[in-house]
Image 1 (cartoon, rainbow, N blue to C red):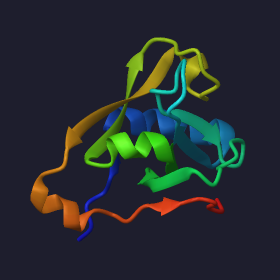
Image 2 (cartoon, rainbow, N blue to C red):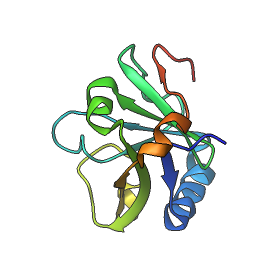
Image 3 (cartoon, one colour):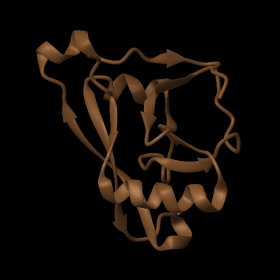
Image 4 (cartoon, rainbow, N blue to C red):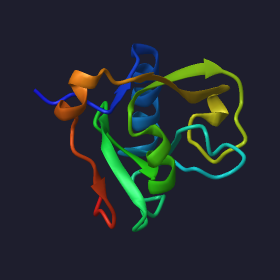
Length: 127
């Protein structure tokens, strides 16, 4: 069985469900840029254009999760878990008006896990 590169906490699932009810299908993207570039951002599916340098890591709670290729180079040996915390980020992410923000917890993969990882896809990817 493949090991997922990206996971989600129960608390984040509650928020994702709330955002899905209000916005329909969702997607996540984490860039390597400045400002909130270190925070995963949630968009209505199709509201963020996936570029040729974006990497698809998998899905969390039915939502595609992408990361910039440059950022992926730093994180490719880690499993990412999407969680939520009180606070307001400065991005366009859909959860911001709720007074919370998504953030990432990470752990390094064990050596024996590396050959079992879900394969990534590099853009352009149709979502």
